[in-house]
Each structure stands twice: as C-alpha cells, then as structure tokens.
Image (cartoon, rainbow, N blue to C red; front, side, top):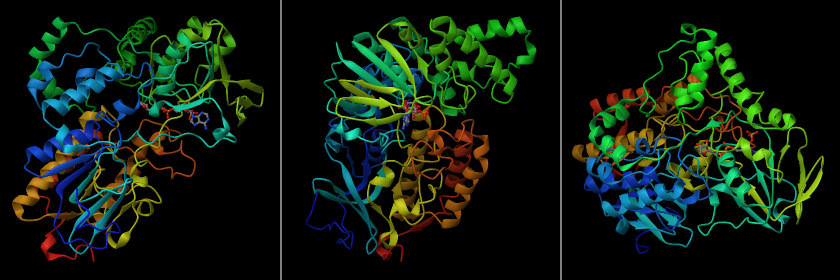
Length: 551
Ligand code: NA7
C-alpha cells in the first residue's frame, strides 16, 4: 500500500505501481484470479470487504444456505491434489462446509498473505497520464495498480425493497445475504420472512423449527421441488477420486458446467403412464437433474412443461393440508424453468404447522411497516424479527457502486446507464485494464465453471500481453457493441422470463436487459479461442510508456 505516489482523484501518479494485478473480492472467482496472477508471475493483491474468504459463502450464513450444484462440481478443478484431499461430506454442501473449503484453498495455496480483509473499495480511478488505476478503500487507504479485476459477484449486492416505514421497525431486521456470523436467535420469537426465492425457501424450514410464530410473505410462488440431498461417504469419495480425470474433462467441456449431458429422451417416446413414472423419478432425483435430465422437449413444448407442472402441483396438494394455502404455493404466472427453480427440503411441510402461515402479497399487499410489525391491506401483525429474503441486484449491483471512473473520468454507472455493455462479460470500452469476470453477460450455468473460464481468459490475456511487450488493453467500441448486441438479440433463447433478476426487473428503475450469455460456455469458448489464436490483436493493445492512455 502507498499514499506517497498516488492521488485519490486519479489525476496523476508517478507511474510506479504497488501491484500489477489488484483483485476485488475473495469469492470463488477472485480467489482463483489471485492464484492465477501469482502463478503467472505478477505481483498481486486482493482486497475484500469481509473478514475472511468465501464471497457468497461468507455473507450468506443463514441456516440451511447450501449448494444445489453438486459440491464437487462447484469446486476448483485445476489441482488433482486439492480435489483428492478435500472430502465433501454431502452431495449439496451447507454454507459452513463451503466456507471451510475456500479457507482450505486459500491456506493450501498460501493466498492469505496476499489478501487485505475488512477493506471495502469505494473508488477505482483510471490515471490517463501513465495507465494505472488508483483504488481507494472507504478507510482512505489506496493502491496504484496496473490492472484491476472486480470479482465482486453476481448475486452479492443485497436488495431490500423501499417500503413505507421500513427503517422504523424496532426489532431485528436482516437480509439473508448479510446474516451475522453469530446467527440470529429466533427461538420463541415472532418472525416474518419476506420473499420465497431460493434463499427464502431454504431459510423458512429451519426458522419454522425454532420460532414461536412464522408468517411467510410471498409475492410470487416458485416451482419448488425436493433437493434430495445425501451424504457422500468416504467410499463414495474414493470413487470420485478414481474418476477425477473423467469428471474434470466432462466439467471442463460441458455446456452447462454440470456433469449431466444434454437430455436425449423425448416425451413422445413414453406413454402417459410411463411419463408419470418418469416424473416420479425426476421428483426423486437430486437438484438440477429435474431440469437437466428431464425430457428434451420440456422447455420447448409448453404441453410437456405443463404436464410436469401439474405433477408438481399435485405433489404440493398432497403435502399441504389446507387447500387454499396449497393453491397459493402453486405458481400460475410461469412454467417450470422459466425462473431459476429453487430446491427445497421440508419446505411445503412447514405450512401444516399451526404456528406457520402464508400471506399472499398479490392478494393483500404490504401497506407499511412500523416500529412493531407489518401492515397489509388485510390488517397488521407484530414481529420480533423481519427476514428479508428479497434477493440481489444481479450482475451489475456492486460494479455500479464501486466508484469506477475510466477514460475521461467516465463513470461506469453512466456508461451502463441503459444496461451493461461488455465484451465477453469481462471488459467494457473506455475502462482499460479493468476486468469483471462473473459480472453481467455471464453464466447461466454452474457458476464456478463459467467464472473460472473467464478468469483464465483474463490471466491468459495478461500473460500474452507481457510476452508481446504490452501492458495496456482496451476493447474497441465496435467489439463491445457487437457482443452486447448479440446478447440482446439472443435474449429470446434465454429460458428465463424477463420478469426475473436475470433481466434486472426485480430492481425498480434498473434497465430491463438480458444479463446472461444465452450461448453459454460453448459461445464463450468460441470467442476465447478466436481471441487467443489471434494473440488478442483485435483488442486495443498499448504500452504505458507511450501514455497518455485513452486520450
Ligand atoms: P430471488 O430469487 O430474487 O428471490 C427474491 C424473493 O423476494 C422473490 O420471492 C421475490 O418475489 C421477493 N421480493 C422481491 N421484491 C419484493 C417486494 N418488494 N415485496 C415482496 N417480495 C419481494 O433471491 P434469492 O436470494 O432467493 O435467490 C437468489 C439466488 O441465490 C438464487 O437464484 C440462487 O442462485 C442463489 P417475486 O418472485 O419477485 O414476486
């Protein structure tokens, strides 16, 4: 760190840098970027707002926060030794185990000495005179870096809706993504949970187990199906070790980043009775198998999808005793897979408990919150705890609030005023040497697989530039615009409805734009291969010694 040769307005520095690669965020993406930078021989530093590594799995500490991608497919794959020595205990690991995995990774590869914890960045300013970035933390410390990698996460900027009186509530008010390490004691308390996305439906059963009273405020129900978690025994893990090369090959080349090949079976190959048996097998299958191993025509034929939805609805009605509550828990506005499907354990069952009730906010919206509770159009109730399971500002949330100022002092949030403009979901024009793997226009798949592909792109680009004698890279506007245009044009191939966080529509005022790469990994690989084989020549490559850069 230095503040002798850096300025905080980004006007000028003397051109020396504290680090060549400064990474922001110690989640799955940032840790790997730090590892790659160090292994590639760059000086590197990672700054992280939290007090330890883990990113999403550091902040989301609510009870039953867990994976719904198979644990060992979510992990790093570059090291067979790492894969071999870390024994996941569950097919879908819970938050503490995942956090321990990232701590183990950081220790094993000696990354901790390169990380500054408790450091929240609020300004990232390009110095045009010599091609450096000045990165400043809220506490005033600053660093001069040649490259900045903002690995700030896609589902990491919590969203709490503006509701009249929200801040007047006198009890505990907590977002699932900001759960304190010491936990929240809900025993014998009156608890409200607002939101029934993946986080809400995970946290509701354990809260129901402890609380005196639980009221679930649901705006829109989701197609929830059982997670069907299971332990991984040491013998199971031994078998995974033996299959490591095959697992790695499959995951490294899979379009979705999952182990499952695309489905081949058409619903037309089965009789009606066979289809019901097939749906029963799907219901009992683990996690995303219900989407990825389902009929090939599930997402293309509304009748097939409708039949699967009816099967799920019948299951909900079987479990939930009160027919009106069951009806409220069954989606009517979208088909299975049109929103990111949550996976549950004991979720529907809690609505049979006498101390648990469901409020449909479409029927009786919230009017206001006061010091003691929540008022809907149906009346008010007192609470001790309000849990906001209301989601995140997907893809661009943190990036738009980091204070990023590029060439000519341009604000990233203005550059993206009508929605993000990117090349490969990693770079944007006018912000040289600024990268954001895991940002907008990224994964609609197993996130670590896609994000580490992007990290490898950034790392390989920096290595190639060094070999060629360059240290500055920007994206021509045409490349950024044509990549973004393609993302917009192909939005109709995204399986998700535009009433979802993947289009930003959950955040009032946010431009409704496709935030996913509809071509997935195959398209990303194609672009990366083309860039690599051209030695990145279509990008704007320059030398800091030929500054000013960007004028
Ligand atoms: P999600 O999936 O975005 O869910 C947010 C929930 O909050 C969802 O049920 C929303 O209802 C609800 N919500 C949002 N705004 C409001 C307001 N104003 N009033 C009432 N209810 C509201 O976030 P999660 O944290 O559950 O999951 C995020 C990802 O984390 C997940 O996909 C996994 O990848 C892990 P809506 O459906 O919009 O009507």
